[in-house]
Amino acid sequence: MLITDIKGLVGLHSKDKLVLRGSELGHLAVLENAWLLIEDGLIKDFGKMDSIPYHISNLPSQVSAKGRYIFPSWCDSHTHIVFAASREEEFAMKIQGKSYEEIAAAGGGILNSANKLQKASEDELFESASVRLKQMILLGTGAVEIKSGYGLTTESEIKMLRVIRRLKDQFPIPIKATFLAAHAYPAEFKNNHQGYIDLIINEMLPQIAEEKLADYIDVFCEKGFFSVEETDQVLKAGAKYGLKPKVHANQLSVSGAIAVSVQNRAISVDHLEESDEETIETLRNADAIVTLLPSCSFYLGIPFADAKSFIKADLPVALATDYNPGSTPSGNMNFVVSLACIKMKMLPEQAINAATLNGAAAMEISEDYGSIAVGKRANLFITKPMSSIAYLPYSFGETQIETVILNGEIYNG
Ligand code: NIG
Ligand code: FE
Image 1 (cartoon, rainbow, N blue to C red):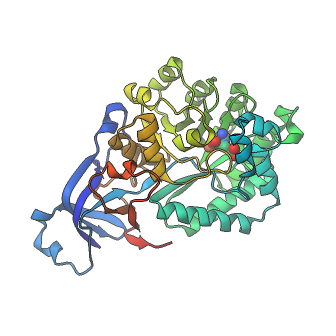
Image 2 (tube, rainbow, N blue to C red):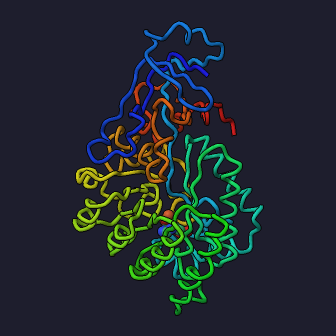
Image 3 (spheres, rainbow, N blue to C red):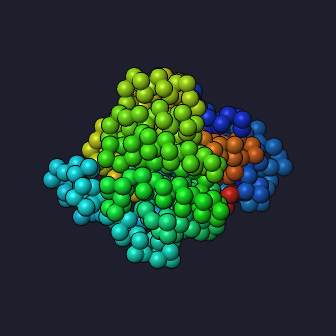
């Protein structure tokens, strides 16, 4: 496929640039008035229209992108899209002023989702997650991470991970699976935390490893959920099976979550709505991607993460949706990029880099995804006619995406 007359080819980085730290996030190279050639699902070549080689300009299969931009697909590195039911009954409680913790204590929250998921069949979960994933892809997402964590029993955690594996098999995008049994304590383990941790370590992990159902391990390290010591135990047990950590850290309070994640060589630390100087100092000496989830702040009414300070400290900031029924019922990366600009004061270039190349880095796939470079996978989207790149986040709540291309082929859902 040859795409011609592209107003701007966005997100050119050399193929060996695998992550962008600090000030690098501000550099989003754009080639204006460009062509792009795709072959065998990969980016084969690109250049300026005024110097397009004759043999390329004569290729039969051509698409004109006049007035339009081409972006690398969004890489959404933090989602919980396998769930049995929405939770809009909590929506009114939230509007009336109940906090996330209060709703959880009143029988809502993660345990509510777990009750419903335990009763759902694998097929039902696969069907509903497929609908969500299709919708996300049509909104420009071309790589995704999906967590378990609404099962909370061996059987149901494995059921969730099998659903994720089916999604991997059926969808034309890379999908990473994260094991998050340490998401909340089931009611029967309320006063026996070690009992549940032992179940995770001695029963769930060996089976998951045996079936190769997970790529990463995650823990919700937070007051009322998993303590720093409990987090450490679970992460160390996961490491024995080769599962690297991606941790829910500092969502509701500053805890030792960042330090324990860094000590366990986390690939990413996610949330960080709460942070302080020490958080930043701890991260300075680590490689962890700092994954921010502004739609969660928007929906829960909690603070937005301090993206500017993280960038100033030369950290690699990524953006993701956190799509889940409790804190973020939305999988729209375009809105995430808008919120990052509007509420976290990231510049459009920084937000776009964070939602593409750094999102790919948070899934360890940035060698093949997340930017436009010769030899990378052709997972891209073509925008509607737009006046500039900044128009995409500026026009919040709308989609500027007209055509989705995955592996070099147009995706219609
Ligand atoms: O990332 N914080 C923990 N997990 C999810 C919310 C889970 C839920 O409320 O169902 C999150 O926000
Ligand atoms: Fe989450």
